[in-house]
View (spheres, one colour):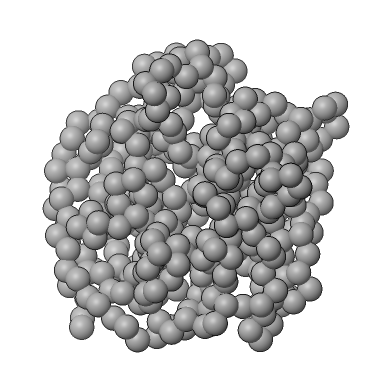
Length: 386
């Protein structure tokens, strides 16, 4: 195994970079008081040479499936050896932010071997859309691959595809959708699959208790709407509720708890501004639109998240970890009563974009760095035995 151990001392700051807690619509957001915190961890390189890795998931035997945005799916052994690309992966649009994106295992994987992939699917006339396919993991390939979800309509452009895959406790599948950048108004349009979180059954059929089933002109897959570009999603380990983080524009990355039928505001309300500096929408609050649990300004450019439930870092239990692309950080949020009580920032010394973060079966954190020579990293306590 290629292993590189780095000892990193982190200066973490509560609300560093001025992220802000958002209360109800009737209350102004407030900033927690910055409190510097010192901590130390070690980082090991498990695998290197991955081309823009986007997501990872652990197999029951401890190996990992890792996606690479150009369209490759690999198995990474526990010693860090990466397999040749698996056959059977659907064709992807590997341009801009598009490509092969998230990977998830069926809740009954031990019995059915089903793997789910989200990706940017090319369409006619230069269009593209987020899609989800599933296939059975065989020897060196995916078998019986079938597309179970396609964004409607496909549009031009190669940005803001989302797209994270999260299985709910009831076995349904959440699919996060971006607003496709140039089509942000679609996030408020219930007739299109843009800027939404979708909820489907594992075979792609509609979950019949979705909030807009039977509503004329609305897509029945919709769970929540008014989202910009959700690239982080995970279930709370105690409540089973979906939590997400989405990209803002210039400012306004948001942590949300998307609920059935709720409108999360984009592009009508936001805590960010346009990249030109111009105002977006109508302000930061409006009746009938939800406030975020927490937001960042300046942005962290969030991607990947996990709730920590392991034993390797006892003080971290219940914390939410989020990768940062823009600032190259691993962000830890301490939660209390459903709110963010504290923020700490790790791994800034790496100087790499952090694309995904997952907890391993060993209770350690595993991180993907996003570059043409991306790495799979293992985060350990500084005092762990060598």
